[in-house]
Length: 303
Image (cartoon, rainbow, N blue to C red; front, side, top):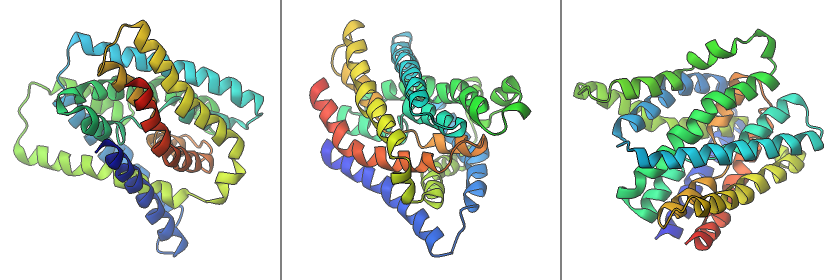
């Protein structure tokens, strides 16, 4: 069942990306329309998704080991990516995108449903903590700092202000602040609608920006990012889990989240901070395709 679920999830992601590509190639939409979609994602859909995830999680102190491990894995992978990017002599905008995509995985959109299918609902909160307080928080802090450092708008940006006013981070704060509050049903319904729109909107936006030729144009950095994200990151998770004394299924959940392909939200940050948005869709598409093989393989090793 897990293998079939994986194939279905990966296929749905790729189909949505290809629909976006088809809309652009047919002339129905333009590449510039991705900017409009990204504004909807950043200011409405993504904050709603994060807000919902925070409110529905059940935090305990023991669960903090998952984001702690996530941060360690992410920082090591970003450091490796920075070194590899310098060796590849990547331009600043590509280097920034390379560091983010090699360090951050798709632990929400693919990680949640896979954890649910493989380990059951009772274990899902562990995947949520890895994603929200590990991957997502790293994107909103270190990821934005990297994007500002290497993006075209670096000198005009005010790092602290940008981070504190970034809508998804505000959603994290509101999610915790309003946890004890019972929201009116119509408010919850509106937030739910927006949250469910996040994934398809991001995939369509990626498809609008994807140029198949970029996969070959960026074959060097894509291959390097794939090695770091799909091979080194889960290997680190396997080792860290053993050092931390994690037993199954905790160790397998840690490896599962670390083995996710490049984070789709990295494209939104790349667009916002003018990173290389030719490279980002190509690496997301390629690593997502390859993950159909690598994720089951790592689960066999971890299990």
